[in-house]
Image (cartoon, rainbow, N blue to C red; front, side, top):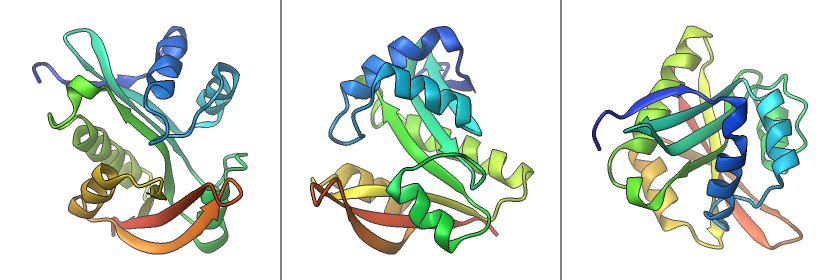
Length: 165
């Protein structure tokens, strides 16, 4: 993918990102536009990957100080003092296998390093199964730290960490 770069998201792009998010459920959770705007306000990191002036992916991240009630975020908050929590990463179907997710994660790693944060954290679905995410995170150096059910048993997730130090 040519001219791939990362930049901060602009408020005016939230509608487009909302539509991109919804097109990628159930691999990422469904969300309302209002909730996405709320995440935008609370995120420590919210950046897009862009190629040829088109958004091809985005990444939303929180730190432990965020007021956020996600069960998976709270699982990490209960166990770790300092981390960045990857709430969601979305890549357009045509952008997959071109390094978009890896570029976003490398950018986050630099961001976390600048803030002296020792862990990247995230989860992926075991039920419904998200094999692409499992393989990506394994290859990127994440390890399982736990598992939990969410959405009244509708989802079962693998809680992942990557040590940066």
